[in-house]
Length: 124
Image 1 (cartoon, rainbow, N blue to C red):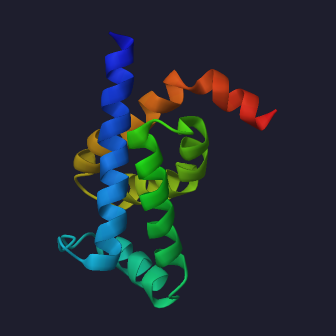
Image 2 (cartoon, rainbow, N blue to C red):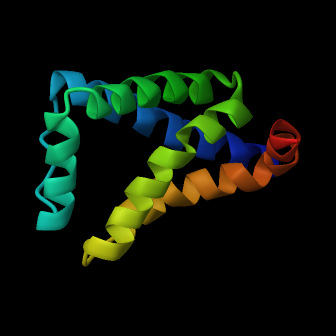
């Protein structure tokens, strides 16, 4: 049963990262407006012409690795700063953060739990 939960979390997070990473380049889906503080932060990242493309490339790469089940602990470690910023921005500035927290942060946290032993070996 736990294996199925891990697979579901990998696919949920991996497909989201892959899709939203590609969406950053192709703009298939318009991102709905957020709190002005979040919008200003995102616009500042876009205006640098370095931060946002780098984040989107990392999302595409790590999302693909999660879906094909290669380097899952490494992908989780690489995604950690992105997940920290996304979660923090929505918790602090989004009046209804549950959509992001349930669909993105929860699968990420579950994957951290499932792969915690391997992640601890990575840092030591």
